[in-house]
Length: 247
Image (tube, rainbow, N blue to C red):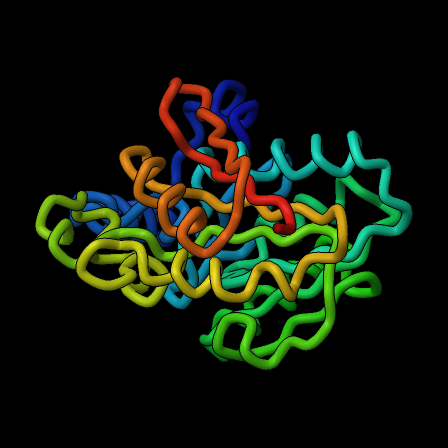
């Protein structure tokens, strides 16, 4: 039922089948399962995307990454930009970027074959399959091309932080999409190694970071030879996005 249905049909009996279904989903919610997991879909940047146990549930914080990347494309005015989404998961970021940049084409990469299926399906559902491809691979190891824009919401939680996470995260998000070594920086170290060859001249890369990781992530890229690393805050005023330009 829609929200309007709830207002106009509030007195309508559920019936035995629907009542049993409601009881089932209430019990799942009481076990801390997110509503998006129960429904199998999640809203992100105005799109409705499928989510499964194989992919990270898209968060509102990640919309800041899309905003920063789109601002970069507008400012640089690149014609027919090529976009790379590393660790694409559900394909949420790539879907949002391609929907907002009609002349762009994009490639998503993920290590999980199951996640790649979800991403392909979401791109097709959004009508973006003709301008996108998904490949299963270990980050950028299999990629020889260069791109105008690289984006990623990589795993960035340290194993030592696992005990402090909410049950909705630890029980239902795939560990592969959450954890990146003891300090949470392993994926940024790999990105710092590869970004220079993946970016075209004048290209830019945008990564989501943990809100307390700005200094550490900046140091990782600085040690790899990058300069002028910029940090963008989310709507709550916390450090959330790192921008790196081709060195």
